Image (cartoon, rainbow, N blue to C red):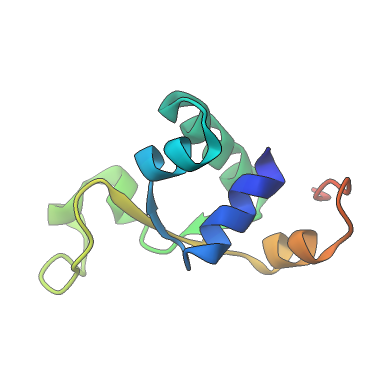
Length: 95
């Protein structure tokens, strides 16, 4: 499920909401939030703009020029995440 989520985020170039991801994966939004947290913790994914999670749009240095709706997040795959997606299925990311 983690790999499928990472591939889905990569396919959307990092721009998506928890709700969209949950619908696409046919799971709860709470599960997607936990899976994204796991990907962040493992170093396969990172927030493109960390302030989105901390202070919301008003705390973001891009708030005057950003066109993302409030519930949409911008993530980016790390080198580790890209390498994991390039590996054969069944491989787990290394810490």
